[in-house]
Length: 222
Image: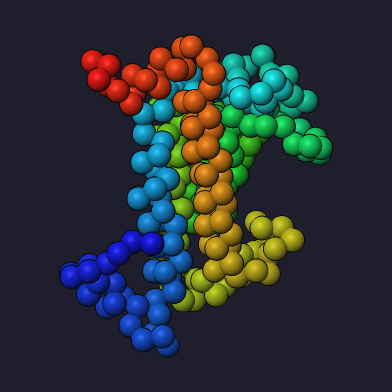
């Protein structure tokens, strides 16, 4: 947890107030946004295209050039498609950073921004999946910004209203429940991406070891 003091503490207390005066809209949004600013988003800086599409095990689901997929379904309308299947195989395949980021961008954030906050249409079948890390991170930033802007604008009435048919069997759940669900989704999928970055950095492969040493020692090797 962050340690607030001085002006930062005064600002926080002014938002929270007494226990009967909690700004729950602020609290729900800030739970995720603090993690995004301080932990998750910085962990994605410097991602290379090689690690973005690295497959840690054979048969991993990935984002691939059109026509090269091996999964039952290749979704997407651009030059790259995402591996998919319905129903999901048991056990589910290991997924790459590219696949996991696409899931966050489309399934976790983009479709919800479209359904609840007037964002552009978004779904797995028609999305244009990026083939490189920089484009994927730009899409992630845009999707996250759209979601957070919508959440911060909900207010008490917006948080209390039902999600509606866009959430299928959870249509009667409140928007506050959806916000909490998305917070959980971002936390655990973000942790998966961070772990894959660590595994890529420390894999037993000469090229990856050289890249790791360059990152941690600098160009001079010291």
